[in-house]
Image 1 (cartoon, rainbow, N blue to C red):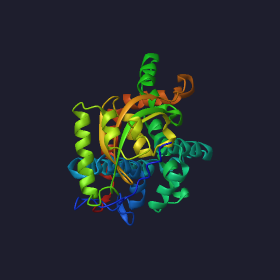
Image 2: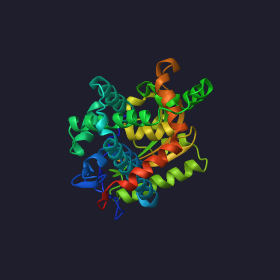
Image 3: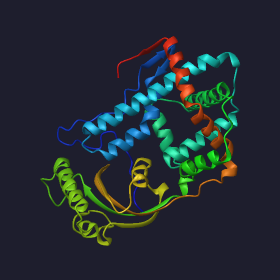
Length: 329
């Protein structure tokens, strides 16, 4: 069984390459909306799954890493700002969400973002200095906003049967039970330090991994490359690992692999002990729920699409009226 890829903020130093020591500063204020504070803790926690994935995907960081990281942070902060605006707009209504629905939503997020690994989830909570109660409150606010938006635009045309079916076909793979996903792939592992080569460094090992990945992408046999260069227990098998449950992989590693096209080398990816190059052979996805069990949610998605332009105009008018202050990153 493959070891879990456990993300480390600073697994090792690669020369003088730029590196963030953490996802984002977790103390202080990210923004204020009408006097209501959005903390950097909130932003950091929501950003942490993607940040872990980006660090894994871009060992050298670089411009593309910075671009995607900045875009993701801005999107999350804007979402939190809009959430505060909508909560202010509708606080007089006294809307409430039943505790059991909040529990179900938290479970869903742990399942989809952390491969059902509650320990990993709580580890990220701790890193972001956020309590479980704080996270439940964030989740409650998000659900209240969704309910308020639905109420605000309740006059939207009702979804037609073909619209519901089309929407379901589009999103059903994202609703599946990812804990039942399985994957087969070949992997080449290059350690950050090589006992057989005392002059090897993380920088030279990364350069080696990049060269191997280049050969694989140019068509050289991945199996042969794995047998020649890989330094793990699967090297003699050409790096082959078959029908591995998604839950045996770290969330960031599995997110990259399950999004990757088949039969195409990806990497090198950052590993706690080195660098990994992978070619996905096949994927077996967990079952999606029947339309009958998720119809209300799918219908709501259709309504939201129909009212998206109307909503954009509405929220922009509220942004202009709100007192919004953003701190520096």
